[in-house]
Image 1 (cartoon, each protein chain N blue to C red):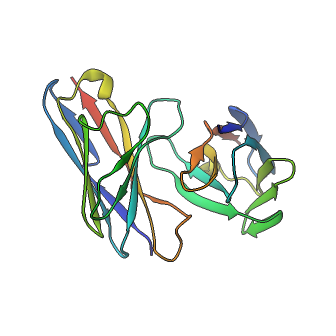
Image 2: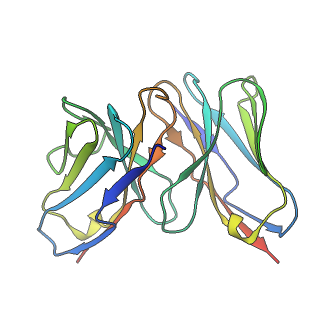
Image 3: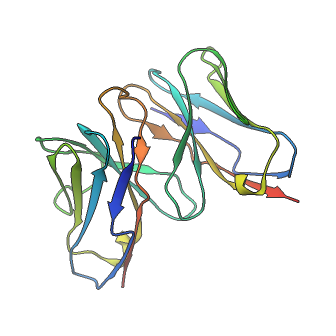
Length: 108
Length: 116
């Protein structure tokens, strides 16, 4: 089966850096996604990691360690608009499995 | 690129009626579309995988006779909630994959269904 763990809530200050962790246990692995979801809206794609290492895209970076079943999303220079839920999703074979998401609140 | 739209964005209906939700890929052809349901404070739950020109594959526990899925073209999939009941009230989201990037899903904006 599939199991994805993320912290349910986090709070960080505007301008700071925050790291959202995700651990997973899946039967098979073909990639890990991070999505951002604002309240009442559908998720938007942030990143996709299939190999170990760090992928940087502007203020957002995502790291993957397949041997540890571990990923993190790093958000730099936090802005108020970054307040949202961040979903870690794993692609075992063909069907993506989503974690419950981490609700990030950015405070002034 | 890779824009997905849904219609309607929200709908309120009476118990026992049927509701159709459309999912369109606007600037690409989507051989595969996915339908998700999300209850408040919960993650997305995959309901079914829809492939153009063939029957949808439903996840365990999802009633295929209640949630009718049609994928008649490469740019349109529809989900019909038949005989809706209040417990069907949820946020329904579709996603699509492109032929060149079959792993990355692009989500529609979602449809909020409220059944009275």
